[in-house]
Image 1: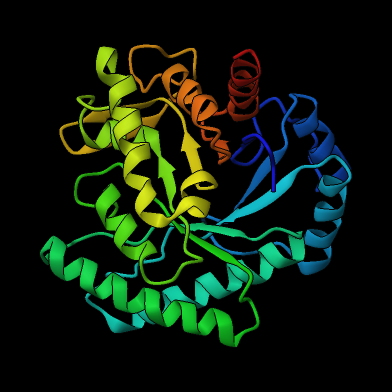
Image 2: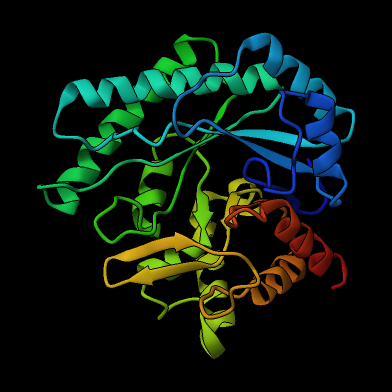
Length: 286
């Protein structure tokens, strides 16, 4: 277990210019920013071959870079269609197989949307799918994988903090992915912003205590500045785009003061490694 947070990018920044799949180059590029985490992106499907995954895992392990996987975006644990819910379990299993090949444990996923049903009905379906997913993961031999449902940025998506915590109640291994940018955008900038940001961050971290000390200290984080509309999230920005939040300084100060050690993945638009480096340096300076 890391004694301090790990920081890393979601995929490769625009500054990475190597055209072919090169595990050593990916690890070196990530480490060059002082980073110790990397989230492999499978939003459009799990397509990395097992041998390539093993090579990337080896190259990253040599530089103390912990790997996680973002599962396909089309997972829908709350769908009205049972086939889609069952396929979502398959996509999680594919992601677990990949993260194991990479030498990692965490699989981050979006749980779905409400669609034409109530939030309560959508959550009930997602909870049922979550229970089935845990059983399927165990049956496939992936019992040591950590499933991480993510808080979401659009108002109609399933993924408020309370909904994510409900999904985490299904099994003690399920660990939240708190996307602070999503929560900021979902609130249309009324939370995690301005002079109230420190108190809002503190209240959120307090709420995680329901998970117990292990998960409350070692949760997963996505962080970026995000523009929003009345429907919530519009698009990811970079740290240079200061018209929108959330600010990172109050969060890092609280993590330091409380001795919390999450894995923090930066999802800035094209500058994710550079901005993750900014987060790492800001934390180190505290």
